[in-house]
Image (cartoon, rainbow, N blue to C red; front, side, top):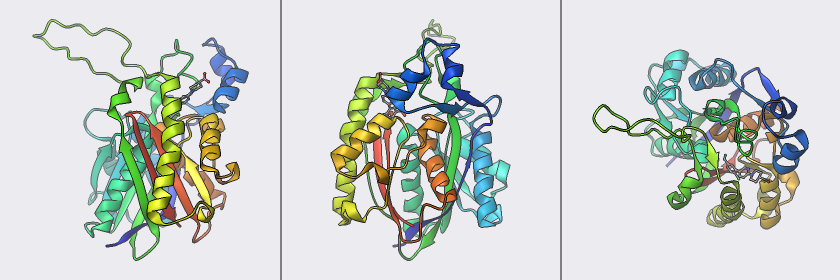
Length: 324
Ligand code: 4VN
């Protein structure tokens, strides 16, 4: 059995920054409300770049750093719930755009846990010796699913893409994971419903089910219960204590949720990395955008141990222990 080591990262967010004040001009909200409830100040919204464009730009960033011929990439996994098309997948569009013609390419859809689920799948291909490297990207253009008449959700979500290049290694890298799903609560965070309308069933398209809709209370309770449980189980299974963890990188949904998770785990807030104030909640992209930022700031040193933890729509959750 092999391990998958995170060798490099890359990110791309659309240029346009939308502030809380910008939003308060079109929805009944204000900066104080958004910051105090979520920690979010700014977010990036795409003007004309779809999800595969963001993902391809992130992939090119990654390739530039590792100085590798794209033809040598063996696997591309894109985590997304906001692909340009139902088909082709975003991963296939990225493959063509970056010229990774020898790579297997497919998408994984698990919303806010998507990057962790995608990394888990790629890790299995590497662990079992099928492939020796992979690019895993989280990419979303959620702005196209936002209902700007729903002030509870449209201020939270945003657009962006980022990812990692992982490679076969004899030790280190991904050391453990704890993933799960609770479909029973799935209807508390929905979006992009495709209704069964055809020429023979007499149905007409109606309703707002295309838009992202969230029962914030249910998701908040789920996240603050599940994330600490999942991280505790992950560390127990790996035989590692909390003190040995250098960083916790949570899904960047809401700073208040992260504070509760920190308190419950008794892991101090200064080990948790947060950047939702600049990017909002970019679902699958939130963890890799933050990871790339940590890398670029030089915060992560050789041998450091990190727990990444995604949680959200599905409902789904996933924690992963990584040694750099
Ligand atoms: C994980 C979480 C969230 C989320 C849930 C609730 C929430 C984000 C509810 C209360 C509200 C402020 C906002 Cl924990 C979303 C996802 C989806 O990525 C995943 N914000 N809030 C208030 O009124 O205080």
